[in-house]
Image (cartoon, rainbow, N blue to C red; front, side, top):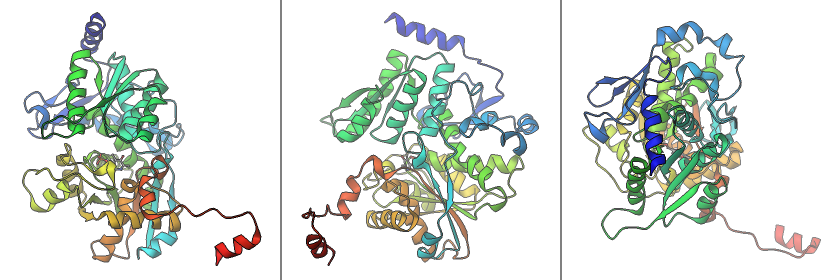
Length: 430
Ligand SMILES: *Cc1c(COP(=O)(O)O)cnc(C)c1O
């Protein structure tokens, strides 16, 4: 295992990497560290998720709209607000700068004055997660790692496999044995090594077993761990969505921004992006955040309203990408929502499936269930008077429905075939 030692030594030599002015602050105890801590707070353990803090006064000097406007249209344009040394180690596959469009028909169906959709399905592997994986692989290379790993069945895994392939890192992905074949194929096509983990005889789920095995393997073999739950840098990638909305909408910022919530990193990242853009003078005010969870997996929403520590919930929903029973980034998520004066809402699977059709038929955007949960949440929030009808709202559609059509199969049926004759067509149409 000599190669492992080499990876580790390379890493420790690079400890005080670069001239980046950033600190890591624990969200539990508030203690700050330099950038020599790899994952969570050494004092608080796994609960002690770190937050990256920058020197904004320094950044403000260079980070101006007229300068940024001339840069390439991907997440690298926000280089001063990313925890990496330059943009050369980001994947060249154009991650970010996804379009925002005015969805007027959808707005009237939801009874809201203005509705904008930001379509994250336009990223290289068709979800929001590409933003985090991009920063993950850049950071891994900077720190001297040759391998990167994660445990996931879904978008985190495919985005990591794609980003690692694009920069030439080896990726190992731990998935529960039950992960559906199309999802596993998405990983294999990028050359990822896929480890399928069986459900243990104990209480824990196959996913948790895969997660634990991934953590152990990263320690044992010296791989970089791409897991938002412990890796503070990944949220910085997710933050670029908030930075982008602020840049793209600048003078026309929406009153509300709606994001679906699983682990909580996405909404925390988007909120952090708005807070930074306000601090840097790009926008006057932060939009309110509406966080949407699925009924079968709503522990963050529960804690948001009840207060106290998070109690793990069931984790089942048709919206697999947000069906998280033990979310790790709930503190950051709740903090971001409160700071924005926003709130949360819970939707049923039925409402999510309806929203999926609504978004496709009235908005022309096909999102996966977790991707359109925000639309279901907005509909409910407007009906409940939580979001006023006069509001201007932006919904982030977080992932494309084309990746896995199994949810669609639940609501729609394959039409019967007909003879290729007008008579048969007439019968079919009537
Ligand atoms: C991961 C994911 C989310 C939620 O992000 P969290 O950071 O887990 O809250 C939402 N939608 C899609 C499509 C995702 O893949």
